[in-house]
Length: 357
Image 1 (tube, helix red, strand yellow):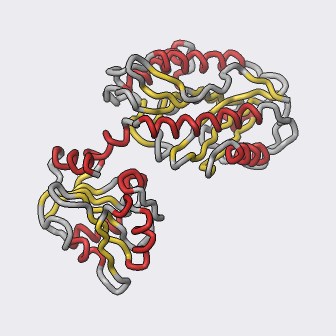
Image 2 (tube, one colour):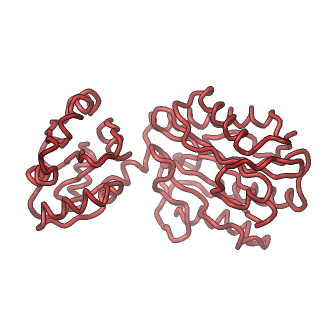
């Protein structure tokens, strides 16, 4: 919270206003659900932290919020929470609102503090959350190891004749068995469904000759895993092996480009150039990667147009893919972290073409 307040001061913000979100969890350790009742952490340069909370939530906030180092200010259901918040923030100047603040809360604040202007709090918070410390990287590593083990075990299972949703359920169970506290998603996309990167896992029966894209992850200590692997059932479909090796090479080249000072967009280009040179550039339809931490998707984004230099401690996915509508898709995804002189993979699940039964 001290670092965030200092960053806010440097950015010219009179206060940071942080409602329930990964930002609030990161700063205070308090992780309530986002609800219509307003909860808001207020960080102002030169003052101690305050948190406005619904009175009925005060016991939970006191028990979990930053070890009691935040002064809690309660409001009752009959009160106007925006008027209550207006009494705790500057009447004018720029206020930083967290990116996940509900529109209804922001609109209420704008009415209550008409002489203030609002900016995204990310100008102060992004850098703090983008660069992970040793403890955060250890949690991400533990999550990655659990995902690796889930893939290793599912690859030894029978796929032929089972439904996508059965494989997804098994993956979810394996994540929990191997250290995850919760499962966030488990995408299983077989055959032509693999050409949809965010396919909604369903009842399609998996058959011999299918490629199967699996993209799954959950949380360990609040920090996320996110792993994608593509397998083939008994035999690869026509053209699959060529595309698979192309995607694997693209991922390897992107990883080799990771080092401090390199622009995020250059890592994207390293993967994209490999795929484009083979004639599949228009079939790589998403960015190469996204940051990861308390959220599955957060800065930095590994995408064309992002000139942000990489720094040691940044963690993100590298996940190139090729998607051939009506046939199959291939995606290979690992989480990596930037080190002092390059990059380090957090995932070590096999990237060789795996054939399952």
